[in-house]
Image 1 (cartoon, rainbow over the protein chains, first blue to last red):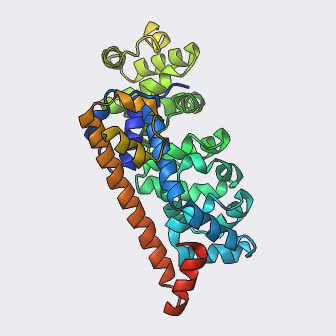
Image 2 (image 1 turned 90 degrees about the vertical axis):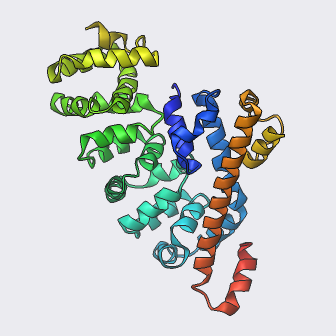
Image 3 (image 1 turned 180 degrees about the vertical axis):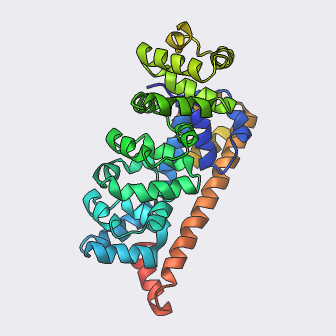
Length: 261
Length: 71
């Protein structure tokens, strides 16, 4: 898996409450190095209060799930709940979640570090995630969704993509995903009509063209060729624009099959 | 010196994350400042959330609860 530098800058900027442009002083670092810094900082933030949250979670282990969930909603609130979740057995946490409403669950998710929630993401039934996904889409929390997409089982990501009604939101979420290979795999399952809509949306902004290029670059040659043909169907001029951008980005080689058609 | 501040803010040992050595002093200073600000904001956010949770309990119980959980 390659680490896209722009994606990582966007994620680090969110963590530091900054705009990506404010981090230009990190130009000397590549995507992997930025990821190392982000992960170290996330761990540091978590560990500072880890002992407290571990004790609080331990206190709730014997309580019935419904009571624990009620305490989370009424007393602890989303921040403490999100942090206690790392120290709560994933099966219990998944059961507690069934007592949360979509809004509270979305608030909890906004506070979580996706890398640390992997086990929980495996245990939560996908149907309990649909409402939260819609809430996060409505609040345009694409960076949260992108981070979680990297760590969620692929079949759940595929199921939750059905909640996305604005095709451009696929690109917005993808711009915060590092696993472009997984996005590519899912995108290749789109039918031609949906792919054409995605291409049309992508060519409305340069950032989107770059994003769809990163995803297409992860597709095998046949997938890239299909993308090329569909792009020409939408607008025969589009691939010239894509090539100019790919040349600037140095990604023409990775998109060789896309440009060869 | 600025790199030491960055490593402190990241909670890593001296010499960890060798990629940081690529940063010049001005960049390291800027990164340390951004990390410290974000860290401060995070701590305030956690402390406010803890206080909000404690406020649900009678005043007399708050001290013992804080002690038990190390809040």
